[in-house]
Image (cartoon, rainbow over all chains, first blue to last red; front, side):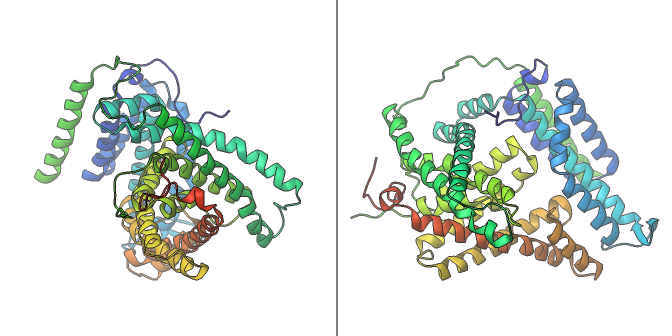
Length: 255
Length: 200
């Protein structure tokens, strides 16, 4: 069964940092590129984020994730390069098409921000087990029920995907066409999705009975299966991150 | 019989367990749309269905959790649109409660409203994060044409979102409505926290 998450199991300094600190870093890293919107500064933030990915030994795993956003990035470069509202200075021409300096500079800034956003999330996603993140959030006061919702999604989706291949085969055996013109393909959407929906909703009934039997709605404090939180440097890193944020805001306001 | 408000935070376990199932349905909707090469995403059927079944709050939570999980498993960009998903869940939940899912005509109106609201919520996000684009080829081509004619940025960006969102959300709501109507009653009552017919 395909593993749902992008988590890469390695042993590094970054893997051992508290998940909440990494979460704070993600928001800080994105916020910084908007608080100080100069190319040089954004490049510095991006370089730092990439450095963390290298330190976490997960650099090569971020490339396919950036690839998913490639269409958006290409679209931004083309559209902003050609059509930015303040187009004035001609940078260069590709055949008959002029690329303007203002638009290109803006597109470059946006692209750097997007890559930084994806990489910053990558630091969290690639080096943090979802269970650890949810457990830390519950420890900080998130409802355990919401925590259950998050983690059970990761179990349910592979089950449902396994179910769909059965249903697709069964419906094909009954003569459903999945290829052909648009109308044929639209018509086969409901016979494919319908049984999966009914099946998975039926499963929720059993699942909720099973949960209630095991005390899902029980009042009283919940305890953890793994009591020890083995993460290091949480507090000091959080303080550094918050000081950086305040410094950036002060810099923006003063200068 | 005392009726709870649709804003009640007192969820049944079945309604909570509905959320992961809804996210699975979202995922499969997208998968099937890709498999059948349909020109739409159809990636919020589960959210819409959850709102119809269990009300706006469950729908909104399903929307947010969906985008967070999708961000974690495939594409971090989807974190940005968590708020759009939440609003879709809220709008469908409220309008379903007010009786907008009784026939196909009303369901199409609901789809149109959801599409317009989704576009309205997405536009500021698109402008803030990517200078007004959506990453969809057709929408961005329209955006580029409108920008070339020096139309205001927000208007071009809104048109970009509308072209992408309205047909998609109308199809999504219509499909969810058809699925919803096909579900057996003893299943649909299970999630409903408004009336105390069958409680686990």
